[in-house]
Every structure is written in C-alpha cells, then in structure tokens.
Image (tube, rainbow, N blue to C red):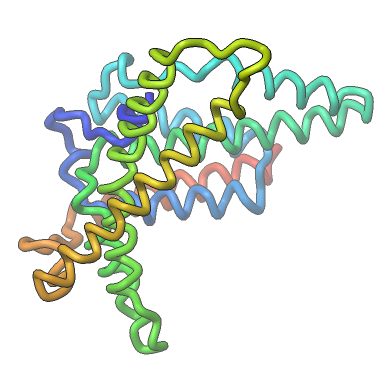
Length: 244
C-alpha cells in the first residue's frame, strides 16, 4: 500500500498536466479552510470536490488503498472513548476523523497525479520569496527531494527485513529474543544510516546537489484557472456554512 501512495498513475488528464505547485497551493487552501471551519457543510463540499477531481483525473478505483483493520479498530476505539463524554464530543471526533481522511486523500491525489521529481522544484519556486529572509529554501527542497527518493527504498528494505525474519526459526520460551518490531526498526535504522552516508559521499564527490531539475516548470493559464476553481469552491463552501 505504501508504494501505491507514492506512485504516479500514468493517465493523461488535465489534472496530471497541472504544475505541482498549483496542486500544493490548492491543498493548502483547502486545509486552511478546514482548519478554521471544520463544519459538516464545508466537509461535505470538500469531499464532493475531491471526488470530482479524482474523476477528472481519470483515476481508477484500484488506486484507492485498503487501510488495515487495525486503523479502523483505532478509529472505533476513539469513538467508544468519546461516546461517554457526550454527543458533542462524538460529533467533534467524527469531524476530526473526516478532516484527517480528507487531508490524506488530497495528499494522495497529488502523489497519483504528479511525478515525485517535480515536488522539490515546485517547493523551491514557491519558497523563493523566503530567500530574502535568508531561509535556506534550496537546501530544504533538496532535503524533500532526497526524502521522497529514499522513502520507497526504506519501505522496500523493511519488507525485506520482515520477510527475512519470518524465515528464522521460532525461538522457544527459554531463548526468546527481543520484540520483532524493535529488531526490524533497529536494522532499518542501521541500513538507512549506511545508505545516507553513502549518498552524502556520492553527492560530495559530484560537487554538490546542483540543480533540482534540468527542465524547471512553472504555472500557466490552466494553473490560474485551477486555482480560481479551488478558490470558488472554498468560497462556496464558506457561504453554505454561513447560510446553514
């Protein structure tokens, strides 16, 4: 499931052709609205809008990840804990859960419609005004690029470690080892540290990080239209909330 979240779906659609920065700005505007006004009318409008964006992007239903049962068990446990407090607490808890799922869905829409190599250059372009405040925008963008590049490798390494541990003979009660999760995390940290050192040496040998991309992209007319649509949806959701 984790690799699917970071994999672009190769489908030709208007959403795929938008600049990565436009999509991030749109998600930021939606998140800002929901952060201050997480009411049910605004949540409903946002859900309908995300479904419409997914349909416009021509994303198949198979890309939607199947969350593990433990996730839904924790959600149900939170509802059980909130229920004795009262109906208002349970309603607020449901709003927080829906809010989190909306942000997760919006983030996955960016991953499904945008190559990961375009995320860091877009962040560097969006953060260009912060350079006047001496914020290391380019360095932060490089960190994001390396993180996005290394996260799938780390997840694959964890899968290999889990598979290798399953092949080990089960210890008896007298020779029981430590927690398997601790063993896997410790081994993953050791592998990540070694790979990070090798990557740093390779970057230094090549003279630094260089340019983030050979073909820097930027916003266009379609991006302005997309942001106008997002702004109109946010304004409409706000107006609907005020009328209800």
